[in-house]
Length: 361
Ligand code: NAD
Ligand code: DAU
Image (cartoon, rainbow, N blue to C red; front, side, top):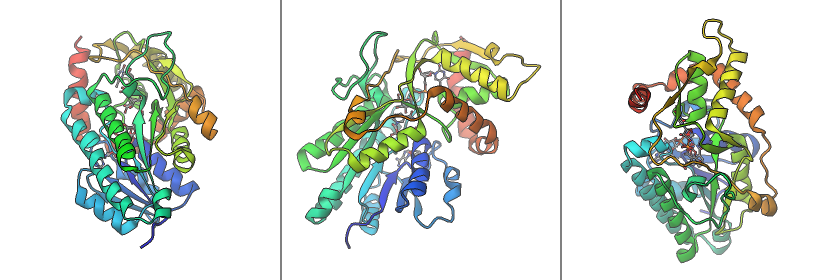
């Protein structure tokens, strides 16, 4: 059977993956097979609006399962793989790195090998059409001083956390599969995403929900660490652009032109929650800010030079951080049922484990 217009997405029930799947079905419309293990971070409910959409097939399974990946490729004959699936939380990688090596390294290796076997069996025209798009992170580049130039595609890799090291390893595998076997890959390295459906263990949703509920807002260290913030919808449009027009074998940095100190992000969230859900008893939510023990090896600053994707592919972020953050706060306050649904015992256990000791000083 010939190659189809279908794409195989991995990790499409997670934060970025589900935003990508939803926008792809809405704007592009070609079929998606979505392979997701539905770990604690994956939520089929993110995709509730696609329940009766025959163009979306969710398969609960592991990217480390070579037989499953191989059979999905031969059954659905996709024209591309968009690889989001990963363990993605830095703090969890510090507490338990093994799952990160398994999924991010072994899982990417398994996908690459299955993709190579499938791609080798295509005819020449189909082989040149096929793409393996690997979604990676700016954390592979390490950390910056206050006046250092932003990360570019030629910045040397210097990962500092088990998470970043596992993503760096996966990027190197993807590169090697192109260089050695000719697999048509493209890699994207992007900055911190925020927006709807982000699991509330990451900074922005954690702070929105804790501020709303009047809980302490745990800021690591002095709150002076800097991240570049990218609205998830902009990230999805960038991935779409790279998938259609990115040059094979290249990497593209994706950023939001929005460097902010963590403390500034948290105070802005406090003010937005005060405005949208005023609470006379609590008063200003800024009072909830609590400085806690720092993350070990905490990278000080990330910044992205996204000029290559702008120059070559004409992509730029559309959302400003202030408006994107306002939209995000509004989304969480309007979707408290979604939040309750994902607050499982495992989630509550993680919050207890990560913050009990930190809050104790
Ligand atoms: P996430 O943790 O929200 O979602 C990850 C998804 O992968 C979940 O649905 C999970 O169930 C699935 N998954 C995990 N292990 C799996 C396995 N073995 N097999 C199949 N599925 C598995 O992550 P995210 O924030 O959406 O990140 C998606 C990708 O983007 C990751 O590769 C991450 O490294 C990268 N990235 C994320 C950010 C960010 O700010 N969130 C920034 C840069 C890059
Ligand atoms: O840079 C891209 C990366 O961004 C992605 O590759 C990761 O998958 C994603 O999780 C994110 O990593 P960070 O470590 O930057 O995100 P996190 O939301 O965990 O933390 C953002 C910053 O906020 C970081 O400097 C640590 C700090 N922080 C985080 C939490 C959870 C706090 O101060 N308090 C907290 O409770």
